[in-house]
Length: 202
Image (cartoon, rainbow, N blue to C red):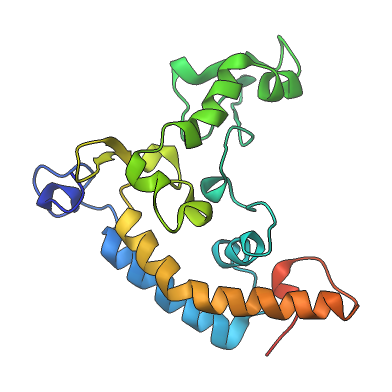
């Protein structure tokens, strides 16, 4: 359960391995790296987690599957031609077929099992997530990390939730400022280069 000693990597009965990142420490790491990026690297060094957050706050879709409402387009293709729903789900029950049997696009966009897999990302979120202020930033992150129960016992809370919430709370005021600055530049018809981070420098 979230908040219990077993929800941390240093407990003998932890839900994760002892070498897993601690959620709180992960949040601290993201905050510090974001601050460094903001001070020195914005517009110079693309950091996907940060740039996709800015993009989302501009009304654009997430650039990363983990922060998207749906998943299922990042399939895994093995050396024998086998296609799986995702590189985190290379298990027999997630095998869609092989490229020898049918086109890759058909397996990704038309296979009902893959469609269900993609929609399950948002449809299986616990109420705690659906009511979270950061839902549209996170969407429960990657389903493979949803190994905890919420405080009311519902299964499906992301192991990294506490750290992600810490990061979003820390970064969003600045993310909104960056997004606002980009909107101003777009409205003033300043020529834009591709990519969020290349729009301006401060």
